[in-house]
Amino acid sequence: MALNLVMLGPPGAGKGTQAERFAREHGIPKVSTGDILREAVHSGSELGQKVKAVMERGELVGDDLIIGIVRERLSRPDAIAGFVLDGFPRTATQAKALDEILEDRGSVICIEMQVPDEELVRRVRARRVCDDCGANADAFEHEIHALPDLCQNTERCRTIGPKWVVRSDDSESVVRERLKIYWRDTQPMIEYYSSRPTFRSIDGMQTPEQVRESLVKAVASALGMPAAQLRTLVAKKLGVQAS
Ligand code: ADP
Image 1 (tube, rainbow, N blue to C red):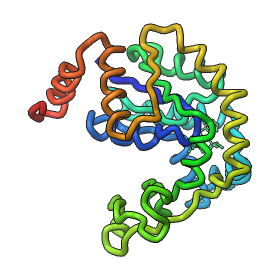
Image 2: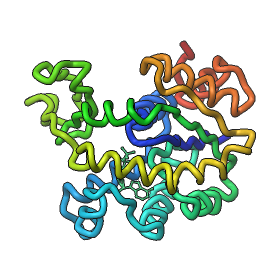
Image 3: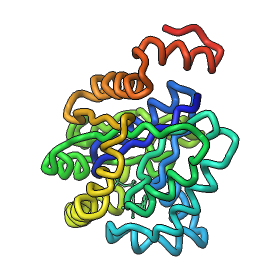
Image 4: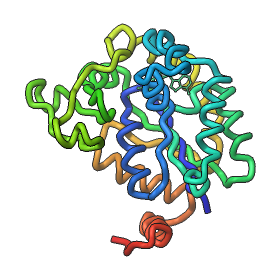
């Protein structure tokens, strides 16, 4: 049984953080279209040069381009047993393409994270990302001069420490543009999923730990099993003892 999970919700809802943790704890890859595109911009590749300006304006890159990227990523062997998608689909065309990509690969579990707009703007203004490994931190929570020593994802981060920067599309005006596009293009697409038995909404205003628990419960219930059984299944797949 594949664990195909799609995280839906506005920018700043916490999808990336939760997707990363869920993927790690369940032994499946996290596929974030935002991360893939940012890496391309960072490396200066042809793709990066194509999408840089669009991303900086907070607009969406073309459907065909992003669908091609996701199709290729989900065809890799590590995604066959499941994946957590973050940032895709964002339009009705992308949602239909995903159904077609996953045709005989089991159903998709869709989790919508709900957070009010004003809180989203506050979170995104406070967000800092490590320029080297992409880890996130909240500058309000941690005080701007005492950002955590959290990210350890790359050799550079482990030895020199994180390099916290503001994401270039996290300025207040660009965030408001991203929210506008979210409500115009992405929220209507959620209706495409909301009538399915595998659709769940969770409250993104809880603490990150509570959101994590709600997410696990929502996924288990969408699969029609108690959360403990999901843990056992995953543990079997990873060959470890369930906690
Ligand atoms: P957010 O914090 O808004 O959820 P992401 O990190 O997911 O941002 O994406 C950053 C930017 O990358 C988007 O504003 C958009 O320009 C581009 N992008 C990411 N995913 C998609 C997608 N599925 N379709 C079109 N553009 C995308």
